[in-house]
Image (cartoon, rainbow, N blue to C red; front, side, top):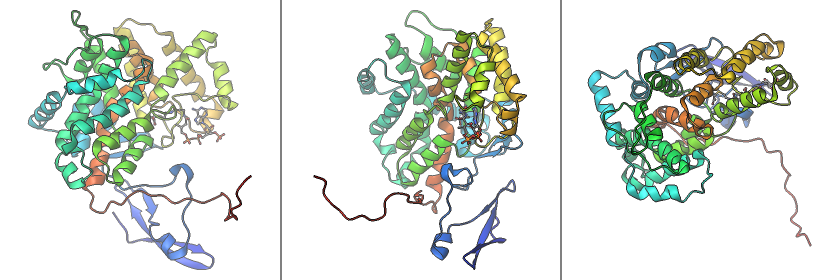
Length: 429
Ligand code: CMC
């Protein structure tokens, strides 16, 4: 990281030299860490749209060009050539795994799939209509209580247990999701099969019944694996920043990713995949071809869910890949979902409309993922849980990056106070 060149900031006739940081891809930033100490000024950046909160080696995005890379590899190449688990290993450990490393990684995930039987009763404690994201967050934190030696909040000790903690989380996030579904459906939970790969095993746990084994279509397995891979990391998004924030205070991996799940839940972030399908259904039921909805979005009455992104000012490369995958999976399953047609029309209309063009609003990853999840038979309230299964390796990689950095500090932003000045205390009668 280059720190030699300097920017000059002039404040009230005084000049301050700010070191310039230049990243691998020529991204530039002023280093303002000493600014307040020297000048009394802080920077104001509500929503962090112009703030690099950290330096990271994991994922690179060029939002203007629509580029996404995990550890230097283009997302298009990864999507074509590797599985979700390979991408997970790449994100966490920095390199594509050799066949032996992958075998070992797969085995450790498989060996940690089972949930302690004492955990079962926690599921029964939730009201029947609890949202699966609330259950997921609570259960991930609960897991830390069952594996307390991996969740000590002693950084050195938690790091020493990272490999096994990561295997538990990548494995069990999927088991918890399937258990939530079967509990809510009132079905007995079906245990994982050791011979099935990660994504197929998830579908087996979700949809098999004791005397009726679910056989997933290979095209469905492939599409779901692709969705997981494309969601595996996305640099400093809302949930990953949350994981890093929690980790920066020294909290263990289980607690940090549980917080990430809560951050992911909102409709502006991971909850958008649910919101897209709800929006498409609403348009379909109203008999609109999407035109009225677009007009309402332009008037600020609603948002075109699955459109727009803080970083991408071009087509989200993940949306491109998933748009094609949606066509394929629907044709293999012989499903003619009218929602896909509405989505295509909305996309076409928005991409030729001045409102969307001038604001550089393009489809994002959530625009097509919901259509695939719906076709596969994943219930709507589980969509964001699927996003969380995919994002788990990214959260782990980011937790690891913070924990391994001896110079990392607790994240503690400043504020501009706009409330009352000091007032005399007078008790109200
Ligand atoms: N529909 C209509 N107008 C929009 C939309 C949209 N989806 N997104 C942004 N705009 C408009 C917004 O009204 C504003 O217009 P103006 O300049 O006239 O005030 C302008 O575009 C800039 O919007 P912003 O809200 O300042 O942008 P942001 O960077 O703060 O928000 C976003 C990014 C993703 C939250 C937003 O685009 C959005 O709400 N999109 C819909 C929800 C969604 O699809 N979220 C998933 C994001 S990708 C996956 C993930 O991160 O989980």
